[in-house]
Image 1: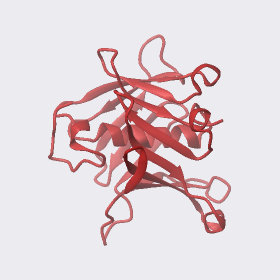
Image 2: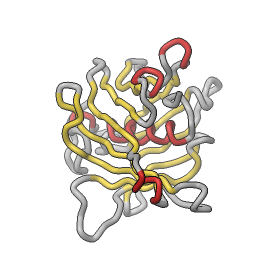
Image 3: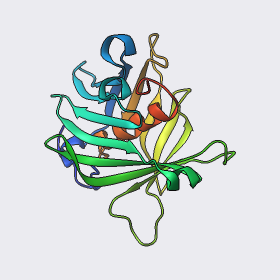
Amino acid sequence: MGAYTTIAPVVSKIFCSSSHAVLMVRRRPPTVNGGGFVVTDQDQRAVFSVDGCGIIGASGQLIVRDGDGNAILFIHKKGGVVQALCVNNWWRGYLTDYGEPSKLVFSLQDPKPVLCMKGDVQVTVEPKGRNRHWDYEVTGSFVQRSCAIKNRAGQVAAQIGVKGMMAGRDFYQVVVQPGYDQAFVVGVIAILDNIHGESTRC
């Protein structure tokens, strides 16, 4: 992936490209590989993978790995009494250093369905600005594989959809627009997968 610096990267500029990237997501069977999913490029090369509860052994925790299997993001769902009283579920994404969480790079809030009839998933990139509460939002339906990650200006950063005869819930396409951090996009998809009780959940 070539460096592209017009848009500030969330994880690293090495995961940004000057052209749009077409990625394919394939869910792993929980009984065989512990669940999660693998992300490949147009040449069928694995560029990312996500480990969930079936591999990590703990709920509400996710690890995003690069194509070489190195952990690049550690994501966890905030818990505790305070979280139980909040109207949103909160997730935190951290860069990893020698396999351990090091620096917080983004937060995602997911409205609790019991308390909110409708609400978009919103993502805040660190460090937070004074005049903004979120930087990206997810619109559409992830369950139906018809949704987009958009920035505050309404521009699409990534589009999730199905294409081809084999496409469906277990195999779908993600188109990331030029300049956007593909590792960050995969991290957001990993959380959406977990929220909806899919391949990263036990």
